[in-house]
Length: 258
Image (tube, rainbow, N blue to C red; front, side, top):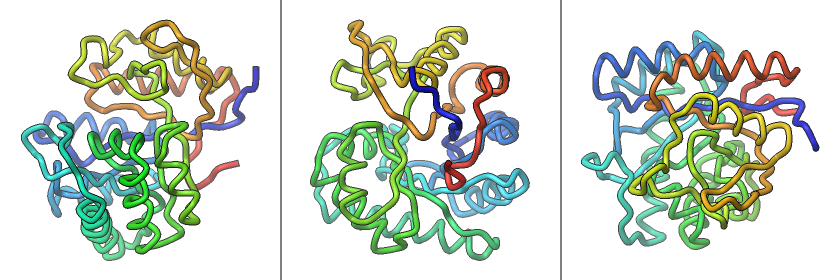
């Protein structure tokens, strides 16, 4: 087995609609190395973007944009027909807004990770993936594009001259083709802590994970996602960091790769 020497641990933040959930996001910050901040469309607003950037700065985290679909009812997770032009405009407007807030706070964004349905649709649709990558390249070719391991997002990002980071999930079920199981399906989100830890260990040490039908998937990943809305997310983050420390795996921010 090929063990990774280091891994980024990323978390989607700036989405929390309640003080209790915002507190969970804040308590996760010491354990992750990169954050993806909602850009006020599927969730969040300018004030929350600013306060989330300020908090992430305190922990020296890599800060990225998390643009999504304009569908707050489903929190950006419902798929519907999209055009390339619409997706390009979504990327340009949302990433640009977070870039401006970051500049005012004295930070530069390091990466972009599409959210929810936009992420999943672009992962499998080369035209939508091209629109995502084109928008990022138009804004700043120094931004890293995070996409599902083995997906069209990574192919398009590379084609547009962007650095790309392949993402893996220990708390989400995979289909046999490497796509994520829809959250509408039972057992799409894996909640058992020991199972999540075992899957994270397998992804990092063996670059493998078992799909929902039992198929063994071989995935190269650069970053591992920890969902803040997973039950006991803070305890899980602590357990992941302890496991990585024990195994001699360095947890580092996305823009500090080997």
